[in-house]
Image (tube, rainbow over all chains, first blue to last red; front, top):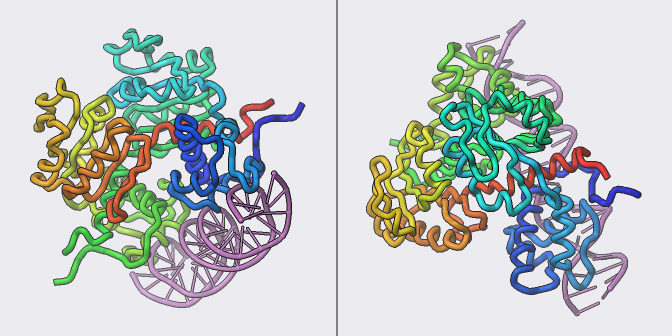
Length: 219
Length: 219
DNA sequence: TTGTGTGAATCCCTTCACAGCG
DNA sequence: CGCTGTGAAGGGATTCACACAA
């Protein structure tokens, strides 16, 4: 039997993926309320984009709508979850049990959205051995072994910049395929490893720039 | 006297701003090490882009380099700080003193990069009155008054989605010009207010998508 | 000779407009 | 008639290539 997963030859830009996430979020809201179908118009309004954009985005993956009617809310939701790869559970590990790490660990949407944190690592001897929920914090030395043994696919890196590259490389060597990186450096990794950077400083600088440019700050 | 700030008529895309941040980061590293000049080549390598892109990005704001030589590290750094608007102190407020809020508050780069947190708000009566560093957590009811009185320009919103829109509107009404939004909703605000969204779920979904699409998941 | 600054060419994303299906 | 799906057009960002300055 052929693959049932909508996969695609054309390279899909990051911006499209972001919008797909938005559409999924909108569909989840709609499902909670009522409405069996949505139009691209309605999805566009909620996603802060245009109807044509919605249709084009979806068309990369197939024809999910009915002409004259719109899209079925639950049907499209299921397809989007398949497309985004969130119709399954992902095994993730958290590296860094500091402030950001602990905030992330407690983030309610992780578990509920199928991201199952199966390991936590930290370099601080004071933290090693502590129990967080179902997992016990391990030494960073155990990364290779545990990532491999637990079949961790995604790693959340919440450590200082100085440690990030090394820990990332070791995670990847042990089988991790994606990294959500909070450290303020650009990781150098094989190109088949996917990295998403979250840089608070950069976000703030983008705000500073926008406000400065828009003439709020004279002289 | 005319403005000394490099401001520009052409609309600068978000992606360019991101790269400018990267260049600044690279320049700071270079300044710590040695090297009085850098080439666009070198900046490109560190910023994960191309030399032509570096030159094009900078050319939007002026001619900062010397032909045959490159860019002066400290000089370009100063210009970039001006361009990004980080050659000054920004008064910010943190709304939401939960896990994410407290992690952000303690984030060392905030203070060191000129973001001065002058107020913290929370809705939880247990938290109101607590002292964090130099500030005392206030009730969310005080947002209008304090944002105005303290001349807060930037707000970091780290509250549940259900409260975000209201608190954002009130901050803006009191004078805030930019919002760094951690709540998983699209805020609807006047278009002269700048919003940057940080959505952990979306970042994870982007990773899931990339891994799924790159054929890691057969069948 | 080296490396910037920049028009021109290219590529890619978004928008348009409409054919076609329900 | 309503709304999707999609080729074509349009617009913006990136890349190319080279004149030119040090």
